[in-house]
Length: 424
Ligand code: HAM
Image (tube, rainbow, N blue to C red; front, side, top):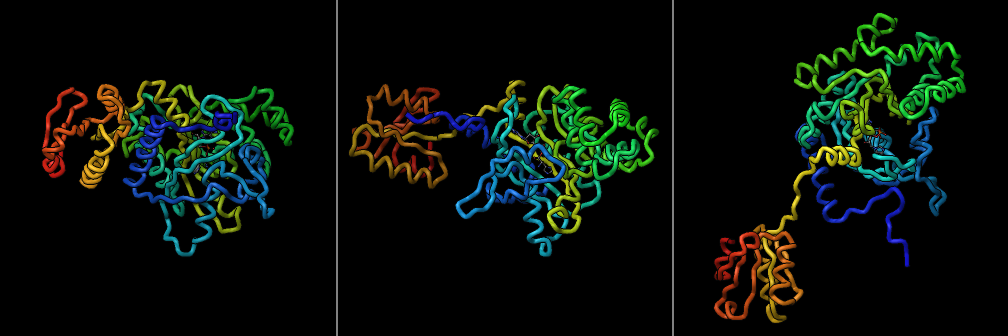
């Protein structure tokens, strides 16, 4: 017997789970379209080189990569942003910037499996490319908050923890860490919640920071107040921008959701400005969503600098959060009718009624099990259909069927022509 379980870390979606996934996708798609974003997609297979970065990003070590029969190094995509950058570079001349695009790709990462982390997940991505001003950050944050609200999550249940990489760069400059080391230092700093302070210090020292620099860095990271931090830094561009963004979000009515958090770094080395993640206010989960500004990613692929900001919002953690809060939506199967013939010669009539009702816009299933009345009605009840259409020989000779309300358990004969013209 073959192994019936899905590949470790991947999921099967049975119909109930598929209904939930479709609901989530609908929320993502609706809020994106409402906010003027256009949908795009790419193939799950990409050239491996798209994901190899100098700073030693974790994601580059988690690739599902292989050589194809033509000798090409390929990888399943672990994230969408590099593919988006590739698309934009391909058609840069004909695109009218800024562009606002969204996508809902399935992504693959060879992760160490923990709660909220799997080896495959769906990830809603929304990005604004070609807008250098922080209005782009404001739009992006509003979009993800509106999706959370549509799922029933308010400022009581979620928070957007936000920082700016330029603040972290400014701290590193202040303590004389050379600029070319910054990306590597930030990738290590992102591990702060996952490893001990000693292990973190060792990693920082291994790439060339002194013990004094590590101690100074840790001291800066204890500062939780933007104004206090501003007094201690020479370069305050990151702080000024973040304050502008917070003000803008306050005017837009979303200030309850935002919280400055110096510990937010994000693990991807391409971020250059604002970085944020969504979690419960007490950060009980893995990040529900993560993103930021990445103005230099496109230039690392050989183009010019193109400003860009966006996020990835996975399906796994948000569904865990909704489950814990008992906020799963009710998603019954939508079926208006199930048609039940009781003999082989009625099948043609059943199919004809089904075809006309479907053309008229109803959802219609047929039950061809030809089982006894009691069993068939039980199956019809379990199917979730609102009504059953029963084909009994006596009524059929008068061009009638019996229509049964499966919730009220009431039934009556009706002329087929009446059913097909006006429904029941
Ligand atoms: P990321 O922080 O690696 O960012 O992932 C974004 C979100 O995807 C996470 O917050 C989480 O919800 C989900 N996610 C990531 N890995 C897994 C996993 N192994 N299992 C379950 N869920 C996961 C990016 O991928 C960036 N490309 C996002 C972005 C778009 N930045 C700018 N534009």
